[in-house]
Structure formats: C-alpha cells, structure tokens
Amino acid sequence: MIVGGAQIGGIQKAEPRATVVARMMALMEQAHRQGVQFLVYPEMTLTTFFPRFYVEDRAEFDHWFETEMPNAATQPLFDLARRLGMGFTFGYCELTPEGQHFNTSIIVSPGGEILSTYRKTHLPGHADHDPARTHQHLEKRYFLAGDTGFNVVRNQGVIMGMAICNDRRWPETWRSLGLQGVELVTIGYNTPSQNNLSAEEGIERRVYHHELSVCAGAYQNSTYAVAVAKCGLEDGNHMFAGSIIVDPDGFVIARATGEGDELILAECDFDKCAFGKSTVFNFAAHRRIEHYGRITNQTGVRIEV
Ligand code: CDV
Image (cartoon, rainbow, N blue to C red; front, top):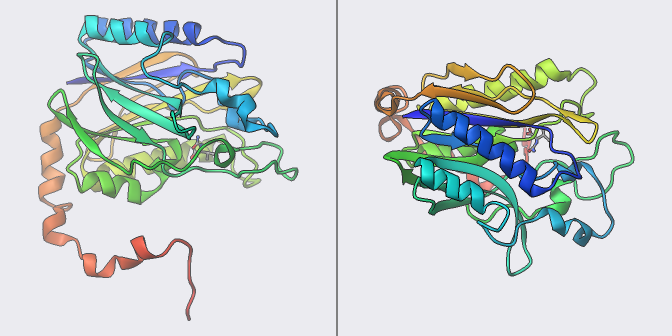
C-alpha cells in the first residue's frame, strides 16, 4: 500500500472551514495521482491551534468544535475520498451531544464509513492562564482527556491505530497499540516551535525529540508510523513541520521538506511488520508483565529509598 501524509501549513483564525477543506482536497487529489491509497492529515486539521489563546468563558471557543462528522463543511472531503477510493484519517475538535469537548481523530474507509474514533489521551499544558509563560498551551482547559483508550481497526487489510500529537511521546501509547498487533500508527500533531519550557530547547531539539519518539515507538512495536504536522506560522505563532513516515525498523522513509501544505508518501509493505513482532519484540515470548505493575498502578514518580 502507498501511504501518504498530508502536511498542512498554518490555518489563520479567520480562515473558514471551507477553505481548509479545499486545501485538504487538493492534497488528496495530488495523493491519488501519485498512487496513495490511505492519507493521514494532522491533529485539529480544520482550525487554528486555538489552545494557545486564553478565554475566560470557554464557551466562546465552541465555534472551533464540530458537533457532527461528516458535516456540511467536511462532506465534500468524504465525497471526494469515496470517489477516489481513498481511505483517510484526520483530527478535529469534537463537541458531543452531552456537551463534552474532545481532541479527536477518525479513520475513514475508502467507502466513506467512519471505522474508528479516537479521543486524545495525553493532554499537554495547563488549564488556567499562566502569566509566567510567554506562550500558553491550554489543552487542559478546552478538552477532556479522551475516554476511548487506544484501539485498532482493520482498514484496507491493515491493522491501524491512532494517536494524537503529545501521545507520541509516551511509550504506553505505542505498547497499547503494539499489543493489538498494530501495523500502521497514524499521528497528527501541532507542535509549537517555542513553548518556554526550557531555555535550551530550540527548534532543532524539539524536532529531534519528535523524531526520536516516533522512530522508537515504531521500532519497539515493529509497526509503520505516519506522523503529520500542522505547521508554519499560525496567527503569528510558529509550529515546526517535520512530517515523517517511519518503517517497522525505526527508519525514516519519507520526510517533508517545507513548512506548508505538502504531500509525503511511501510504499509500505506491511509483511515487514512480522519480523520484529516474531523476534526481538515477540511480546508473548519475552514480556515480563509481573514486573510492569507500576505502569498501570502509579502515575507520578515515587521515591522510596
Ligand atoms: N499538540 C500537542 O500535543 N503539542 C505538544 C506540545 C505542547 C509539546 C507535543 O507534544 O507536541
């Protein structure tokens, strides 16, 4: 299967959904011309990354959320995908009928059916305006932690699972999917180039840590991974690009070169996942779950010596 990543450049606050969907469709048409059969878009593909902004009354930001999917704005994308026979995944902000807000992604079959919904588990940042920070990251204010857990689905003959942005930095994400035999992990991200967490942490380090996380996760679970950015300048804020496709050996096999809308693609031979899964990472043969209790019983570090 040829798998594509549709990197999306900055989306400004004033940009309507219809313009963004037109950009997504242009990349899908290009992907189809180049033989892509499954296409991955970023986290929060439809809107600016609004958690960088603080509002006292969070309901003021409900207009960034989708109450149904597909909806009038995204239906043309679903229609195009069905016409082209293209499977795809993208992220958006979900407002449920019960009033819950999630950072969500979906996998859609080439027939246009939503096969799987994932709600972001690891929400970075903080819930209240932090005057000490030059850059706010308010995901904990605007979203609930996801309630879906990490699930896989078989789409186009491949076992696929989703993660969203910060999830890629947590080995628990990868192993939860790995234990279900995942062969393709899709990850959309919006990663600010500056987040004032550390003075030394320039863009090169941030890109390195992103790649390190995706390559390690892919290798340690013997799976392909596609990590796709929303990037460039958004409302004056820079987010790094660096979209990549990684093979089950942990090597980058495709990489974006720019910071705007850009297609990357790679031929993925999913039979290659079997080698790692049956040797070094044969979980049934080698995992020692009697020693892993802390991973699910304990959150923070506890020093007892
Ligand atoms: N959207 C994200 O989850 N971004 C985080 C940033 C805040 C570090 C990330 O892990 O890339």
